Length: 162
Image (tube, rainbow, N blue to C red; front, top):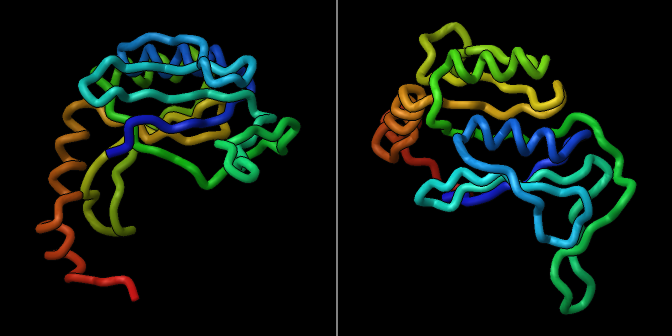
């Protein structure tokens, strides 16, 4: 289970506020020692949270026995990162929030090209540069039916990494 994740943004406070709105939660300053960082907290039973750092910050391994550190002035841009975020609001609310922000927000089916989608998500492009797949309660049901051992092994067989 993923309980929290960190992302970067041009405007971390605003992004954390918007994500908190999607999650029906709240935005708070992030107490991790990185200036201008915020967290969107959902208040669900899992402690789900998204940390939002300034775009010029990178996390780097600590030296010797020290914990994770930060690197300032890191290069920003597109990243291969994305996540699926389940939210307690409906599709119209997600699309309204995306439209209000001017962020690309589109509903898509996921699955093999040319075949019927196996589940659906809303691509929610934070600041039009970082994709979060948003799933409303009905979309989460589709996703969780598909991402089960029995369903995956029926579709792909039992594959073991070498």
